[in-house]
Length: 182
Ligand SMILES: Nc1nc2c(ncn2[C@@H]2O[C@H](COP(=O)(O)OP(=O)(O)OP(=O)(O)O)[C@@H](O)[C@H]2O)c(=O)[nH]1
Ligand SMILES: [Mg+2]
Image (cartoon, rainbow, N blue to C red; front, side, top):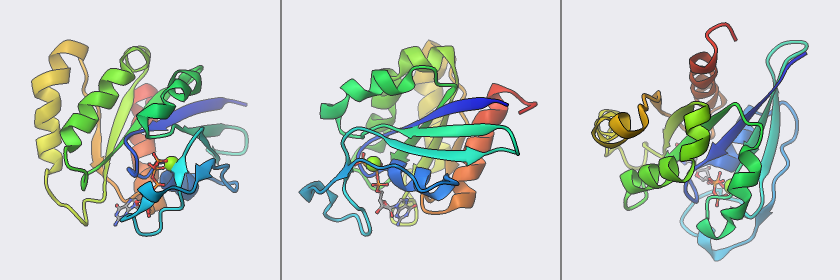
């Protein structure tokens, strides 16, 4: 029996809570608080103030435990706690935010130590609402900045956080980069 822990992070509204809910085989645990900051996000239930939790069965014995961080920096004290014992990081970026590359760089830096010890996969959400920048542009950004400094070559996918299949493919890419046999 194996238990794996994966952490989902990214800026407010990127879809962390939604993605964990889409993947989880059990009703997810959420700590969403009502906030005016959800305005403009259709269907967004609130903002995460502590964590999200979901669980996905890989087979009859192995489980992946999914933890989501709050997106807002004022709750960043949770980030350090949530990565403990984690196997890898899913970074979600909301393509409709004003500066999605800055968001990506910010979170890659904030989780630098963890990423160094593990692996990261990047999912770009809400591309149906804002198709630009493209996935190719994201790869260029990574090449320009993080590849040299952090030797980073993460898989980057377009995903809709509401779509189980999309989130599942991204997670599989992460698990595969960690251990091709998994
Ligand atoms: N149109 C569209 N909406 C999306 C997509 N992915 C996620 N959403 C929506 O975007 C919102 C994301 O909200 P949450 O899942 O609460 O975001 P979060 O990352 O947990 O936010 P915080 O907890 O505040 O950091 C929800 O309303 C989703 O339905 C997408 O690809 N397209
Ligand atoms: Mg959330």
